[in-house]
Amino acid sequence: MKDTSRITAITLMLLLLTAFNSQLLAQYKVDSKNSELTVLGTSSLHDWEIVAETLEGNANFDLTGGLKAVNNLSFDVVVNSMKSGKSGMDKNTYDALNEKKYKNVSYKLTKANKITPSGGKYKVDATGNLSIAGKSKSVNMVVTVTPSGSTVSIAGSYKMKMTDFGIDPPTAVFGTIKTGDEIEIKFNVNYIK
Image 1 (tube, helix red, strand yellow):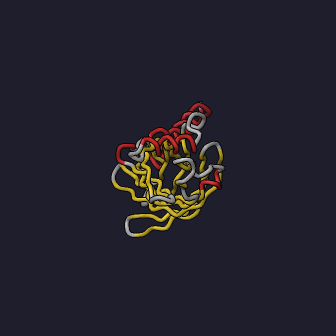
Image 2 (cartoon, helix red, strand yellow):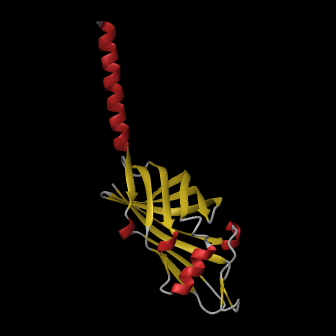
Image 3 (cartoon, helix red, strand yellow):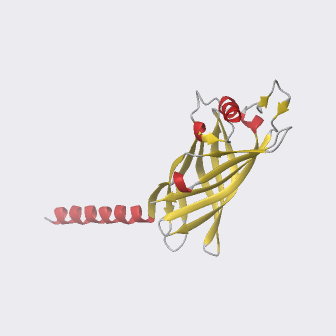
């Protein structure tokens, strides 16, 4: 009888702890319609930008008394949702990213190194794996995290060289127009419960 009571009590405690922990680390998913990701670059003719129309991903945030932890954060950019308003540039982008083989550009957080509160927002020193056209690299960046109701927004930017990911900067008009190697990725990704 004592053993049955003890097992019941332990089981109840485990269930309560599991429920409590799931509340602490709430699951969020990317709200693609209210998120933005833009890639900015240069060329020998003019500056350019391309906008991702479809973002996907998930994250767990511990928001008890402020942002305490970020876990399992990921987001994917669907390559063929990247649009510049110019079909030729879009095609060159898809070819450069080898879209037929690699459908997404992906980011997966490996560690939130430091979380610093700043007036209702949080600066997070983040390390994660960025995968582009089949090549992954560990990248560091500082992002701003803003919790608001059932939404958590993550904003930031990252400068990189296409050649760091094995991508030859696209050219046009038989190579007379050349894209610069360095690009900047600017994003404001909203996660919702």
